[in-house]
Amino acid sequence: MDCRQIEKIKSEAAAKRLLSKECWNSKKRICPRCSERKIYKLLDKRYRCKGCGYTFHDFTGRWINKCNLSCLQWIKIIGLFESECSILGIAKSLKISYNTAYKAVTHLRLSILSHSHNWQQWASNIETSAASHRIGSWKNAPKETFPPVFGAIKNGDQIISEYLPCLTVEDVLSLGLRLIRRNNLIYSSSFENYHSIFFYGLFDHENFDSIEFSRVKFHQELHDFWRYVAKRLCVGVSANKFPLFYKEIEYRYNNKGKISEEIVRFLCDHIPETIAK
Ligand SMILES: [Zn+2]
View: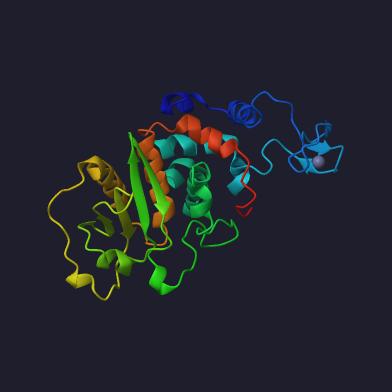
C-alpha cells in the first residue's frame, strides 16, 4: 500500500474494513485481556469474553484506538504523514484541531518507536501517557544528563541508534572527537563501536562559545544520513521532543520514505504493556 492506494479509500466503511482486517489478520478474534477464544458478539457490534467477561471491540488496546478519530481520519493522517505534511497541514486537511492532529502524530511516532529493535530503552525515557501534556517528550532528567547522548551505527544501508545513558554532553565534549554542528544537532566522528555519537540542543551550555566545530566533512558513510536528519529538523524541534522525532526520521531513512503500509500495521498492533495506556 502506498500513498495512492490510501487516497483511494474514501468511505468510513472501507477504512474500517481495511483496519479491522489488519488488526486480526484473518484470524479468529480472541479476548485481548485473557486470550480466551470463546467470545460472543453483542448487539452493538462489540464482543464479550466468555472467560473473563471483558467487553471489547476490534481496536481495543491498539494504537488505532487513540485520539477518538474515525478509521477514515486515521487513513488520511497516515497518507499525509507519509508525505511529511506538517501538523498544521494535517489539522486543516481533516478539519480537526491542531491539538488533536498533534496527538495523533505523536501516537503514530510512538507506534514507530515501539516497533524499533531497541524500543524499550527509548520508550522508558519518553513520556507515553496519553493523559500527560508532555506526551512524546523526554522525561524530566537531571540537568547534567540533558540533553541525552545517542550513538549511531551504520549497518549496510540501515542506521541503528542507541541511547547512551552512560555519556553526558560534558563527556562528549571532553573526548577530543571532531564535532559537526547543524543548527542544534551536534554529531561526532566515530567513537568506540559507533560511527557517530550525537545530541541535540546546547542552548544554555556554558562552554558553548568555546566549542570548536569542524568545518571539514568527515565520515562519508553517515554524511547523507545527517543531511537527511538535519533537513527534517529545520522545522524547529525542542530538545525534549527530539528523541521521538529522531526515531521517526531514522525510520523514514531506513525505509526510504515508503512507510504507509507498515504504518497501518504498526497502528493496528497492540500497545505494549510497558507503554502507558
Ligand atoms: Zn477474557
